[in-house]
Length: 142
Image 1 (cartoon, one colour):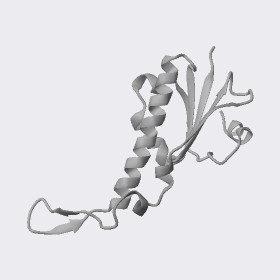
Image 2 (cartoon, rainbow, N blue to C red; image 1 turned 60 degrees about the horizontal axis):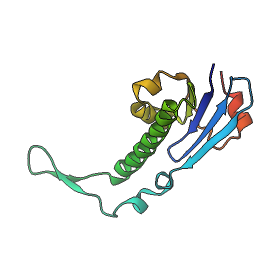
Image 3 (cartoon, helix red, strand yellow; image 1 turned 90 degrees about the vertical axis):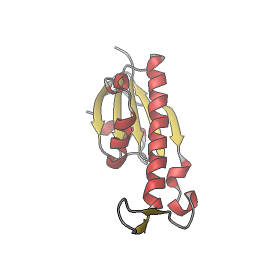
C-alpha cells in the first residue's frame, strides 16, 4: 500500500497533503497560489465589454467579460493542478487521491483530470477547506 495524497483546493489556492492511511497525521507536500484567480475581473481585462452580433438579424449585445475571464483563470489553475498531480502519479509519489474542493471548483477539476488520474480518486468532498489547518482537513476524511 502506497501513499495517499489529499488535494484541498479552491479556484486560487491549493494544498497537497500526504498520509500513509486516512487515520494518520497529514504532512504538507506543497502549497500553490494562483493570484489571477483572486483578482477582480476588471484587473484581469479591459473595462469595456466586447460586443457581438446575433447570429440572425442586426442586433448586437455586449459580452460579460467578468465571467469569461474568471472562468478562464479557474480552468487554467485546475489544469495546472491536474498536470502536477498527473506527473506526480507518473513518478509514483502516490497511488490514491482524495479531492476536497469548493463545489464550483470541483467540477472544473474533474474536467481536467486524465482518466488515469481519475481512477486513483478514492473520495471527493465538495467543501472549501483551503483556510483550514491539517487537523481540520483530517477530520473531514472518510
